[in-house]
Length: 260
Image (cartoon, rainbow, N blue to C red):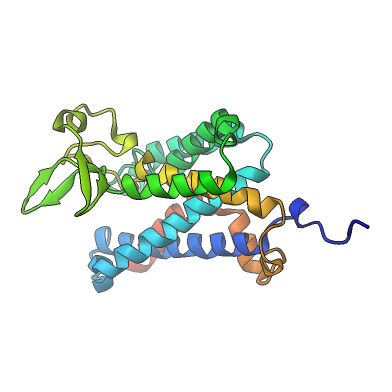
């Protein structure tokens, strides 16, 4: 007889909301340190430590992965993506009024485009078995991690598709000088963006998350993952877009009150 008491496939995965909430809090802390350093000349020693960059990318990658996972719970990812990208464009035009920087393809632009691409190609993605799709996506993420221009021995050199010290297929320098390929991660040395998450390699991590979402939605994860353990943290995880949009203006006003 079928057990009707447990239906995790129809419920949220509480631990994913909690992890996403923790990731967005870490992102807010990172941006707070950025503002202190570059807007108020407050020395933040760990900001330039190599290990801190690694931690930053881990939390950003976790956020992107879970964003791909929750796409499996949406009935209209194209609409969600359009809204997210539109909010990102608002940030692009508004941020210069608060700081000296501009966002050309930040996390909201990236997530918006990724959601739209997933919505358009979901039937194609789903032709692959979940395990195979997940493995291929992770492999492509690793292979495209160094697509961006590399700073080697005091000079900028083209990035490559491959694995360091194993095999490398370098891109032509002309691809970086075109100027319009920065959403893909191809840009010259003069390109600057206060927040930057190109499609290569991050889109493949997003798609890996979408394959993981199949297991999450089907109730295949351990039972521990489904209930909410820290309610306030899960709530933060459900409103990450609005937190991302509002935290910089709040930080800007707060720091200006403190230092001026």
